[in-house]
Image (cartoon, rainbow, N blue to C red; front, top):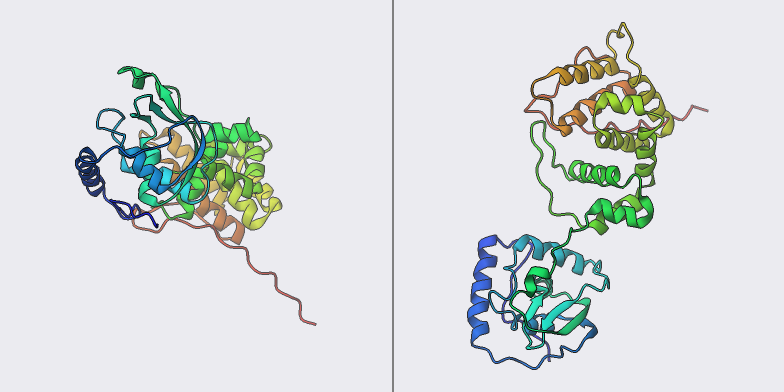
Length: 323
């Protein structure tokens, strides 16, 4: 028979209020249900939506921390994409059948209809203090994931650049604000770096060959993202020309030079009582690069509050000579 869950919720549109109401209704229903037989023998298994409901029936209020919608959505997204791997982190029950750890994972599977592989431990001795010992270590972040994927040394910068790239690509920057992203999983960051070789190249170049230009921009991650997009769109030779010129501050700036204008913006910002936000530095840098690569003269760089956030200019198609 096809399993039909007692409760449903669309995680893509659900509000925190709706999620909390569902939790309360589930708890009322749970209290009136008989405990169903459930295989809690130690071992690997695939937890289905039906299994998740049965396990959540063994999750009385107070036995586990209260789930949050953001974490449930975060896990559900990974499960739906098939990014939930066998790590050995178990679903834990005590020997009396009470769930001790995995509430967020089970709610994610239950409400998304996904299944996930996991190890199950079902024989932890009952102890009212045991929860104090579960998940009390330091969580791994995207930089940790990149380091263990073989990108140590640049992992912190790469993780920051991916965050900037996702904000930029999803239109989360405005001239004055930065809108938040949905929580990004470490494996998404790893995949982004693996799929974009120029990102690693750009980070290495800005850490070494173009260090002077990076120091003009102050922020290693902003400089690396700028370099990444320039290489992706225009190639290494254009990046070399722009970053080499940016890294040299002449005694007499060239009139109309967009690079001189960017250098002045950054020098003024260094002395400002309230420096620009990182994304505003990026906005000025994109404007300067666009003017430089198109040969436009610029007397002063500005980023007005009401204007759209700058986008990188696309390379011009090569004109074929007439025969």
